[in-house]
Image (tube, rainbow, N blue to C red; front, side, top):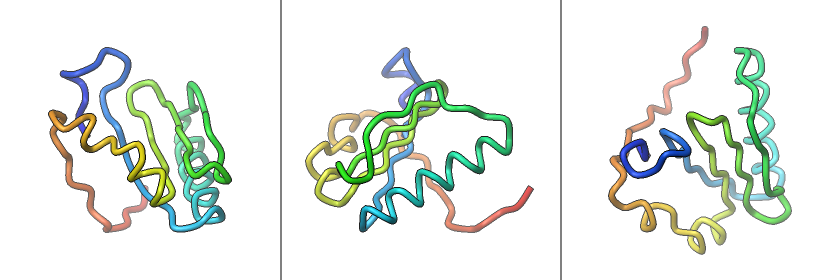
Length: 95
C-alpha cells in the first residue's frame, strides 16, 4: 500500500500472511537476509512469530507479516483504505 500521502513516518506498507509460526519466522528471516545482502538494515523490528505478527520497519517501507487471525484482527487494509494498492508480482527475479 502506498501510504506516502497519508502519513509522514513511511512511504509504503507491505502486508503478507504466513500460515504457521514457522512460516512467519521464515518469511521474516528471508526478507531480512535479502535486504541485508543489499545493504538495507531495519530501523526497528517488533513482534514475534509466536504472537502471529511481525513488524519490520525499514523507514521508507514497513513490512507487516501476520498470521491469518492477526491479519483479520488488525485489518490494515480497512484502516488504510484510502491508500492506493500496488500490485506485487509473484514472479521471482534475481539481481
